Length: 105
Length: 364
Image 1 (cartoon, rainbow over the protein chains, first blue to last red):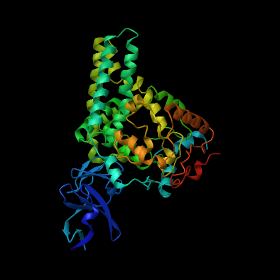
Image 2: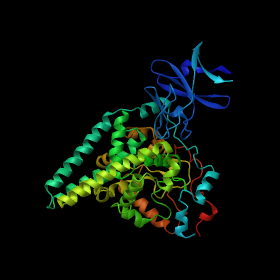
Image 3: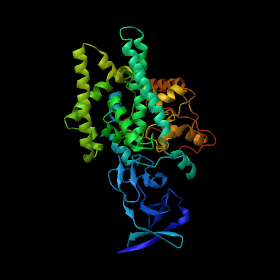
Image 4: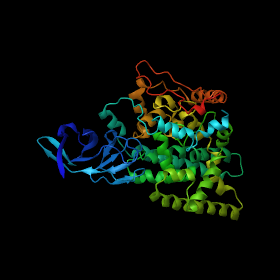
């Protein structure tokens, strides 16, 4: 069973950027792409657990700030060493100026 | 504790390893200077042009000096040409290896990867295991028993450091590792950190390198000339001295088992030649604190955080004097380390200051 949870306001995330949100004690990363689409993933890198909200967003990619591993934040696919484990991503939707992510209930 | 026993703590399966983990020093949260996100994004922004310019210059100068050295072979004029070539090959490659290994030098990934492969070859460092090894150095910088890249232990192996000014340990070590990898194996330490799926890359690279070195030696034998070895492989020895001197300015003599890079990493002001050769890694504190900032933005990063970090050393010579004085004292007093003063505007040091080690490590 899944449920939609409000993560943040759309205005909280700049274009081509990422923020961290805390939901039920767990961090998630919320991204806004250059074409104003919103995406969500786990908040920490799968390699060294560094917070991705401090990383660099560019061209659909999030780069971990600690070891520079890269993921496609739209699919979670690990793109370059040292990351080898994909990032978990979540469905998103925008309603009433809010970004919602779909979590397991 | 005798020096040999203390140095054994730096092994990656030593009592210090377990101790650091128990104390929460492994994979811990480190102090970060406060920089607004908008400014940080600008500092992290990637571009290709600075690294393209510097790479053209680097390779162009190397080819130029090598050509001049070959043409002047047999005269004393060849010596300065090969010293310059050697430094570009055996020292400047270190910072190229480092920056492209982080993937930050270029915006375009294949450019990073191409220079990373070339620089790895020059430094005799297999690109796959070394990439993973270096992540450990960044996660746990100077955490005793965990960081695999501690250049100067307490006490430092000064003879070994001196020998490596001319690659006397690093070159045989690199060649040995290359042969191990070419046989389809990793060293015991590398098995700890190279993922299984990545290992075939290491083996393939090593086999290509063996072929290159074998060809180089073969050409030298057939032509009865040292020139092929002076051009390929040899510079990793005779041109290595600058990269060792640069590396000594990074962390040597500073705090161990700390969680604040201001306590264990230096920033050293250098002139344009050294900054070109070293690719701005003289801003080493800044690099460790924010590894996603490309080398060409490190001076700007320094400006952004300079009120929260110790004053930079005014020159490489000033830093090295401090390093050697400290390493010499640590031969007999391993509780001593350099602790830089913070400016009044800075946030106080974060976490332990130095020397948190197992009881067995306490010097007598």
